[in-house]
Image (cartoon, rainbow, N blue to C red; front, side, top):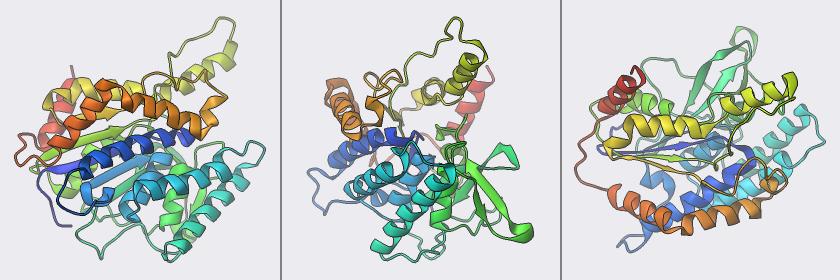
Length: 339
């Protein structure tokens, strides 16, 4: 893969239906990037060099980077997927998985892609690389990166685009594991989910594998799906209540974002956008309503502080000189973690 100076990296959190929020934020960012330029508007894959995502964030990364879709196209397709897959309560995990596969097959057909198209894109050089996070069902400890690019450290995983989407979205127990290959090559993937919904650290590590540690970083963009609210242990909740708290803590993308901000925020290239108020978990009924999520996100974007930060990000993304390299970002992150 051809290396690029002043890399522009993007990380997409997982979050199911809530991923509508990060798409609305990306729409605002792309509007700023394409506004008042002397060239034709560019798509996200043309504005960014590298994307990574987990769960529905991985689905979005693939649609942007691998399938070269616009924000509006992704919003339309994601709306169909949410209606057919995520907003269906009384269906089995196997049916939910089958519906997601059907949605992806329809998408691929309409966009003239073969259904067996591989995630890895060895033919295209000048493109936006991407990866999604998953785990193996038989060993759910390590996180697995399913990549659209080759790396020296690991052999190529010949997974299809459709199976990669299912693998990163196969959050348990809502979905069935995704089976790929036969015989000794058989692998069963489940969504990375717990503890891996914010893949920002993996984005830094993977970018170092792909582009080399000496490559400068112009921007590191992290898009979230809204603050889930304060996590509390209710009195008298028993084991069930404690299990829910553990689940919420492990899925809290906000805590990871705060840690990364503390670790690399001084580098000047890290930008995190995620709705701070209005999308808390106690809005259980509204949070499945895409129009409600969009309204909350647009209110967040219209806030002067958010609007100004988006403008700052857009102005800095094409800066000619950046003082920070991927290695320096990684070193800064590790040194802060050891304190």
